[in-house]
Length: 280
Ligand SMILES: Cc1cc2nc3c(=O)[nH]c(=O)nc-3n(C[C@H](O)[C@H](O)[C@H](O)COP(=O)(O)OP(=O)(O)OC[C@H]3O[C@@H](n4cnc5c(N)ncnc54)[C@H](O)[C@@H]3O)c2cc1C
Image 1: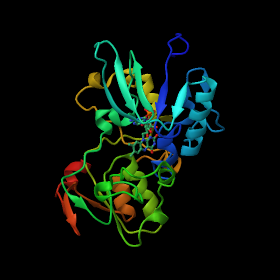
Image 2: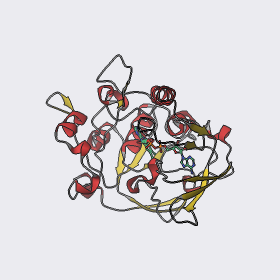
Image 3: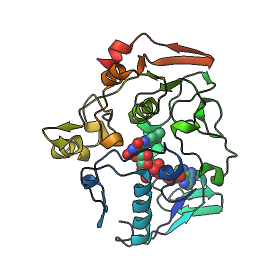
């Protein structure tokens, strides 16, 4: 869009294009929306199955191909370490690992800048497990060590085989937690799932994917702050062909559901007695 409007610009990426999808997620992660709905301007997503869900590798290929298609002026391996207003007050100065860059406007397009994506961790020390994929090189609480190199970052994706043997407590009942629970359970693990606040919806209704209904109702074009009292995103996954996430089914199959995790210290975990409330 910036190129089309003739705005001179520069894109900075601290790692590689689409790094999140390359190395910062679970191996078997799928795009949450069906293939027919995946699109970038003038650049269709190539697929054989409109109702299928793309793998993270396919998303990496798609974004990388799009960057080439629009000839994005992108500099990889450059991290922005600070951003401040220019002394004149009308522009910005970005401090980067490759020096200072001045710009009139600076869009921040890191998904984690969105409030609902910011990590909220309980006040506790975690040992032996983490909320989400186990990532070698991460310290207590799942935080990545700052000294970790990009080469190491490339080995971060996780799968059930990387977890130490034994039962697993998955903390977090978002799309990732649900998918990880199901995958671990299918891999023969004893799995406990700590369930927090969430919005469950059927994946399909009257033969249409939820994405179709959200789009037909215009909700995908409605800013979050205008969506009514419940602004949480529905709990959906593209894993396993786009299953409806149903925690009661998980329990019927053998996953042990637990209330919300309140605290953890070494080997002791404290859970709220609020599972029925969360499920209701
Ligand atoms: C834990 C987790 C699990 C998820 N699982 C799924 C899933 O299973 N399926 C699904 O469809 N979606 C999933 N998502 C959502 C998906 O990852 C995001 O919707 C998508 O990545 C958003 O893309 P984006 O381009 O807006 O931001 P991002 O993908 O976050 O891209 C931002 C980029 O900015 C770079 N960057 C950040 N800070 C700096 C800096 N200071 N200097 C330079 N570069 C910087 C990062 O390296 C990154 O490449 C998940 C999200 C999270 C947090």
